[in-house]
Length: 179
Figure (spheres, rainbow, N blue to C red):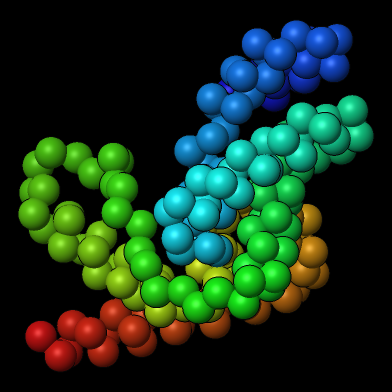
């Protein structure tokens, strides 16, 4: 969704049009779920938390000042909600995301194997590492946006992303050498 369209929808929501908020939710729900799921790693709980995220967004929408992109503001709320929930429950995580609708039809088996390998490697990362990788590669957020979402400095985001890439490479190499 384009920024101008989002800005208009936000204005409509602030004027009481709840159907405009439904359009905002529809535009972002899958990406918010993906981020929350990467942190929580439990589908049912992630779905619940996504509902909480959008309730918070609705309640706090008047506080959105358009200084950052709406998605950056939204992802910060989603990230903080997921991290807070995780800390509260001290959850140990071990599941992986099963949905991969972006895979093309040709070479399906090979792509599924690669995706499965990558998902298994990501599942071995800490929740923060998995969230950083998701924000960077799935959501294509800039270093600055990731810093805003996570509350880390830009330098820290860069260092952590580098370390996560190295760690993923090592995990994947280990798992392919076992086979």
